[in-house]
Length: 399
Image (cartoon, rainbow, N blue to C red; front, top):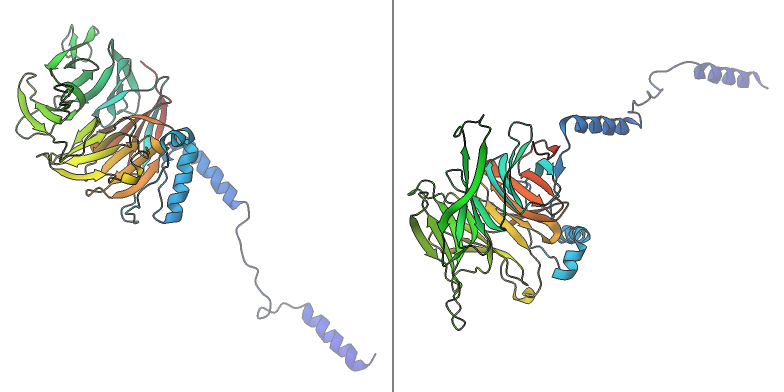
């Protein structure tokens, strides 16, 4: 080996043993691969402490998203889809600005389904099935009590502005009011409390179909009754729905508003609600047809119908609405048994979003502060909101 080769190898060996900060690459600091798993564990512990938050899912505005939503709804409610036909939602007026989260903030587990829910306050309500049950979760502790056992089947129920429970019974042409009496009057500590259902208003010859609280400025504490006029004869069938308002003195008829079938699209009404402007939202659910809602103003003039009439799909049941009501900002939320869907509409009746539930809904009501009470076929009762709140899941145990 030549001397020059020895010197070259020695120089290379020496340089390899020295650290050159201008040449060496500093190793990049990266998080460990198991960091994501740790975050999931911490998130699970946090959910166990503060409660589990349930949330619906949103329909997408694009056609692909709508088809995916239809497929999900069909998987959840396959039997209903086979009986009722195809499930198609209108295009959504959807942007990030009007997107809302739809959360269940309270869930109560029961052994039997609820037929009617009548909220007293945001977190207080009467649950009506074979009994009248009072539920209060406003203090964070669930309190429930059976007030009265029903011998008749309730058809409709509502709370008037005097905070009284009014019930319309099947095959009865009168409304009944839940009355309270006790040895110590209205003392909260009274032990001998008793509740009776006395006649409130005789509606003959009409039959109460659906009720809601009235917000009339002229009469304090009256209620609104939606009635269907019975046929005058077999040759001349008259079924014009009548909005009848009664004053709170239980005897005075305040006014009648006849809704003409020629101008107002209403058939077989099953639910009614009213906003502060006097607009009425009426749910039509004729047997063998798809459901719809009709919004009319205080003069009985039609504002819009949802969904719009689709003559091509008149024989297919694409919607099975059981309730609808106004939120404080004027939007309308609609509960649909097909696909377990919750529709949200703007003031003009344009669909904003659709959320889905996990089971078949059975009844619906809107409480103050936009708390949406929903009873389900599996016995659960949930309180939803379109605001972000943590949920609480509790067992419903009578006390």
